[in-house]
Length: 579
Picture 1 (cartoon, rainbow, N blue to C red):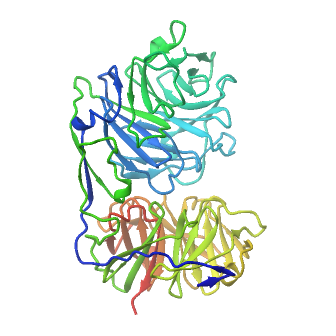
Picture 2 (cartoon, rainbow, N blue to C red):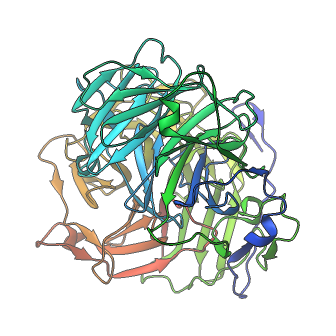
Picture 3 (cartoon, one colour):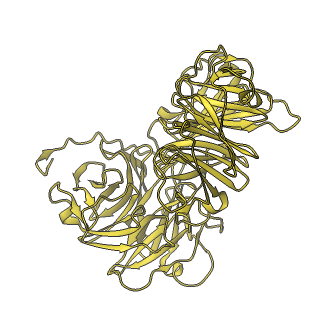
């Protein structure tokens, strides 16, 4: 098949349809057996610690170790949390700082996504750099260290997770010039401790910004040799825990000794990280309840990821693994589609696949190489159109997964680039609309022009998003309106396509039982119903469009459709209406 002068090979499409149930991939990690091979342990972590967590941006996972430093499991970060850098634990929840979008993603300890914060900014409203690399939390106080801006920033944690517009810092502290390679951050009641990767020291700052900055002794390994690339720090029970991405270890130091005495300070203990956790960037520590003793046990982890990314460690010779599922298979998901729907399609950027649900079962196909950050999905004249947020192009596939064509790069009206938060698209005849949360705009293009040649295409029209619609993620369309899904508000914002009139917000969308949505990402309109896919609840919810924009109070979904466990990070949905 030839398009635009190039010959494109047909994809090797996997479509497996059957009626058999798909068992969830279950990985059982026996900590007693892991102890022999998971890593070298010298000394013993303090008994006050019941668990360690590390974040690894290379494989986009959080790893958990027990109090003895033995691997207990891991989970994959959701799509969008692609540049995870900082990690902290607060009130039992894990908070992961993304250095690209300057937002914090909250997960429970089992890996279930909970919420995402507003974008964090400097006190004057300017953006943080992409080297904002660590965070620390104490009560409602959230601190972030930004090496690129050479500052510490303070925010209200509650405000960060309330609403969608960017949040400006309430306080700034300029880093000491010697602290030029700030990578890690931890906190106590009086001080902030900034880990410097180059100096291998902690720099101590008063939280109120007064007084002198004090540098600690140099941190070394247990044997006195140099640490490699210390990148994260956590404080618990009078000890500082430092993760080293080069040595693949976590070291323990006595805090008082770090700031007393002279000379290098060897670690009191160290444990080796699992080999799969080869690029740990930060560490969080869970303190053991007072009066309890940490013991090893067996942990069972149910993974919604394909077997190729399971939590099993390659160093664990006796790990027991039950894997009855294939990489693609049928699902226990019901195939009872809502009335008026003959098929759902979802796009999952984590495993780079499109999933199809219809009366025949579950099918999927792999996206073309280059379409690596698929975000938006729509269907037009029977073809699937997928927006890639990194290269700002649209990839067209037929419903069996055969690649058809790729558009030119989409740009703003003045020729400047879209942001990497351009996350959804909608098509009606020749009108192609894209919502770009980073630019705060809706942009219209000619669909035919987008696919006529490879040159970048400037938008023909722009509509500024309402300030309340600051977390725009999904987009759908009818003859008169554009409907923009806001992930934080859990509402649709209705805009007239000609850019006139007032913006109208829908009622808040809820689950069938009235419970809150988790992370609604995509929306589609068909036959008077709106279909919303939720990447946290792993469901597609159905709402009556007329009811969304009439009446008051939250609106429970009419129905909900559960996605297959393999489809664990659905970012958008497209609907084929029944004939």
